[in-house]
Image 1 (cartoon, helix red, strand yellow):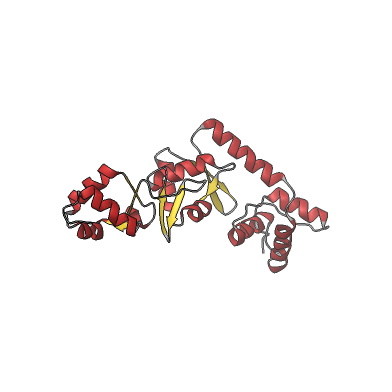
Image 2 (spheres, helix red, strand yellow):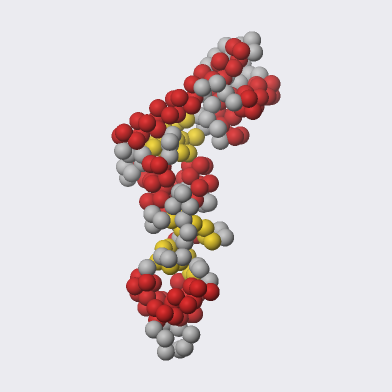
Length: 219
């Protein structure tokens, strides 16, 4: 591109070669200050990344967002919703049964536990303890009620065969575990929420007994 091309035209040509840039490298390529480069980006339209502490930039027209509103260039993630906080709120609200920090982290491909805790403190999400994890829900009362009901439905259904086998194997490894401890152990190992009621039903089916549901037996 000619050296006398308009800055926005030069910006477009640079992003045509490489879809994501950090601001300092982009400013150096543009041969303008960082402040000026930010102005050019604002004029054209851009997204900042939800990963890498928002340090990467891409232009509005570049991302091809998936059904979750996310787009990744290698390990750099961008969201249709803008910031990571807005993205977590939207993903949670759109989920059928709420989402754990691990599930959300897998979606956005970065650790987000501390951000989720802050969103709860700010009244933008709510959560409840479920097994070994917290499940995050929308702040919208009708959405949250449907999400909580979906969890109740899930935890009252019979266990899938592969999870049932894991529960039985965990019981063999830890015969002193209570039903609650078994549920927590499965949640830690598989990120699957299993209820005490489901394990209790499984044990009845196999003629097994546990003397306590919520605490470990005394030594």
